[in-house]
Image 1 (cartoon, rainbow, N blue to C red):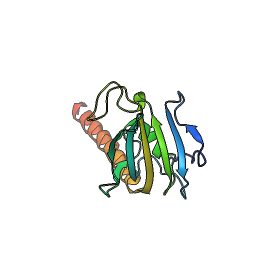
Image 2 (image 1 turned 120 degrees about the vertical axis):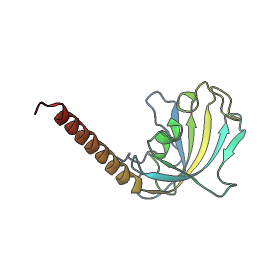
Image 3 (image 1 turned 180 degrees about the horizontal axis):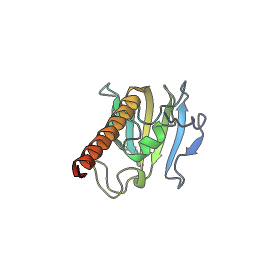
Image 4 (image 1 turned 120 degrees about the horizontal axis):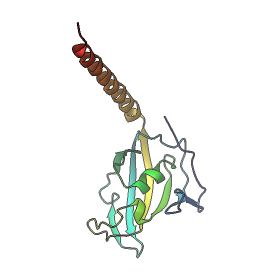
Length: 157
């Protein structure tokens, strides 16, 4: 499994995209390794606009959000930020529109909005990493078998 190195120290702002449009500032250190791409992560978050308006939060629901890291199930800025966090770490992610919703308005989020998320990585598990790998291998095997069968059907006897 591919993991990113943990990035940053408490209070330090770290750029997570080459163009500087995703940054992370750790507010509480975590422990252990960073989650690998393809694993399931669970995070608590509060999302705000630059003017401080809160548009969503998992905290009042007392239910962290779960998603598979690096699969595009969340905005690109989240995939970039969460993969650099350790379990228990809290960080502020500042995500410009190119790594969020771009020129689309989504619910209470206006188009072209820079978003600020307070994110805490609660937990992660590698179960999905291996299941995903096995499914890909099985898919390739089925394609190869299908192609071999199809080729044999077309060959003159």
